[in-house]
Amino acid sequence: MKKYFLVVFLFISTFSIAQKKTTQNDFQLAENYYRQGEYEKATQIYKKLYDKSPFNTTYLNRLITCYQQTDNFKIVENLLKKRIQKNASQIYLYVFLGYNYERQQLKELANTNYQKAIKSLDKNAAYGGTIGRLFKDYSLLDNAILAYEKAMDKNPNANYNFQIAQIYGEKGEFKKMFESYINLIDKQESYLNLVQRYASKYITDDPESETNILFRKTLLRKSISNPKNEWNVLLSWLFTQQKQYNKALIQEKALYQRNPTDLSVIFDLGKIAFENKNYESSKLCFDFINEKSIIKEEKIDANLYLSKIAIASENPETDQLFQSLFSQFGKNQFTIKLQVEYADFLTFSKNNPEKAKTVLEEALALSRTKFDKARIKLKLGDVLVFTSKFNKALIYFSQIQTQLKNHELAQQARFKVAQTSYFKGDFTWAKAQLKVLKGSTTQLIANDAVDLFLKISDNEPVDSIPSGLKQLARAELLAYQNKDEEALSELEGLFVYKEILPNGLVPGEVIYDDVLFFQAKLFIKQKKYEEAILSLAKIIAADNQGFLTDDVYYMVAEIYNNNLNNTEKAQEYYQKIIFDHSSSIYLVEARKKYRKLRGDKVQ
Image (cartoon, rainbow, N blue to C red; front, side, top):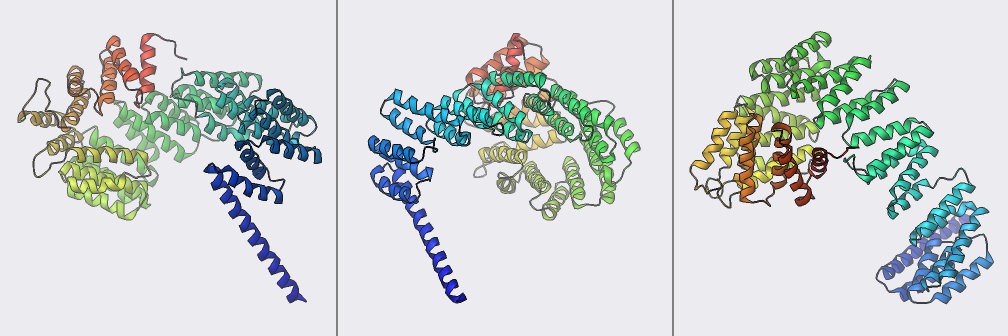
């Protein structure tokens, strides 16, 4: 008997699986016909599927569309009326029926049925999602909003604010879109990250953009009428997108005062400000952490960034700051990153690589993890390149690659192998390393790798004919070693043995764009701003549509704005980016600074 039931069970199971597979195959075939516009063939299959599963709205929707595409509107009308007569509770069918009339330009009948669908929600709000979605699919956006709103009105637990917000976005009604997103969070705070993700499509880093202003005003109104932490979080996020880090910090401080347990968000804000070279705002963040935190590791991390800020802003008391920090926290396994930063400062700011090497060797003896060892060896390699000991440096970089495969530190080491090989003039090996790094998961490394790869590929010597790339690499090495005057002399040498045209360039050789651009950077570093502008002007004179053009315009504008106090000239070059280079990465910043110089009120 048991065997009999087992056989029956297996037969039924096999039959069900076969039926399911047949249905899937039929649906796929119908979909293929549908996509190819062969509606009559598709109709036959959808009809068969619908007859088997009359409550499957996908089959019904496709079948109706196929009939409508072949002008069989009466068949659709009869089909839907019979279904409504048989089961009046399926109120979503009125949307299908209304749209069938709309396809025939029978607007009055269409609207009558649309209103029936919406009015029916008074008694059966559960269909609100289905009816709203059907209206949206038919691009009947106002009706979709009415359906969603009525469903929420009748059922306080329903929440269609997300769908409503998306529809307002499609309509370009951004104020109402943001209000719907805010209402979504007001009902359920867990939607915060989702709203950030979707709102970010409309938010730029320009605080004067219409959508940014609307979002900020919507949040401020909501925070007054119904205060919640979520509004502070969103305001902080908005100010961060706009690079207004001080304003973001005010919001984060307010949140911290209410719940003084977690400083990680302020730490992240400080890092973002630092990476965007807003050292003043970054310092405020890390000073706050240093003041409020009672966790030693947290305070060390904050002070690491305070030391980075001191170096970047050329604070004359940076050395004393490091000594103070080592007195406070000691030289141990917990302050490895601080010791590495000190070595970097000694090498590249104080020209004291020997002392830096001693600091790093002592740190290596204190390190406990392979990651700390890698960080120290990475910096030791930098110090060795600084002193032209390339082979020793390459050994350290290669060790990191071997010991930490695929880790970000290994990728950094590979880039340094490529960079060191470039400095040495070994372009083939440098390119081999850069090819691997172009797909790096770390975007900054990938970008640097692509830039260096293109520089070598565009300019490397062909058939032993000098191209100037070796001299440029030599100049870049000298600049890396803080020998800026020697670097400039090396660059000048590139022009000596060439036929010089009136604009100072040799036509057809890309290397001279790179040479002049690098020359300008060195002049800026030396505060020789007029000379930098002359170098940049030569690039434009040779080709005002070259790949460096927007970089050149922005650099010239920044020099006039920040260093030469010539606002008229600065506006002229910012304007060139706004009107002539609308796809430039500098566009938003150029527009913002241009408006500020023009005297516009910045929101």
